[in-house]
Image (cartoon, rainbow, N blue to C red; front, side, top):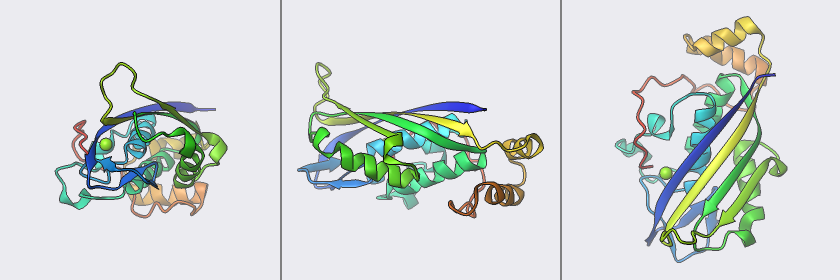
Length: 205
Ligand code: MG
């Protein structure tokens, strides 16, 4: 059985006057995270882990911060695109593990809620999502939120000729039909198309 791993990292500075959103969850706090989007540091790290696992570039490839369309965007949109890339490549999530590093707010009291939120966004069970928290001891980063994420994927078991076609990703319409046939309509792949934007690691989202 084919398996792949992915890893993602992100960081955002805290900023007064914006809401704090982590893992798709609105969190009561005196400051939010600065960013072109909603600054959801955890979803950005998970998005990059998913994209990396199927060699599909990174979050900046799909959502360049230079594009005004993504200003203030909900990061669940970025995550959805990464999930579509994973399905198109013929894989599904086995489990995901994450680490959040920030001085405040304390994550442990809301870790259960965060796990539920992230699991719902990923379409997996809460038991397949790990949320861990650290304080940035000795790093002098008390005004920054950092997130790390790893993901394990397993192949959907697409037969070789079809798998090869999906992997080549030449004909988007045919791929959509194949993916819908194999994984059903649980995820909307109609807007798919492996983007051919230039590879860009510059992520300010
Ligand atoms: Mg980011």
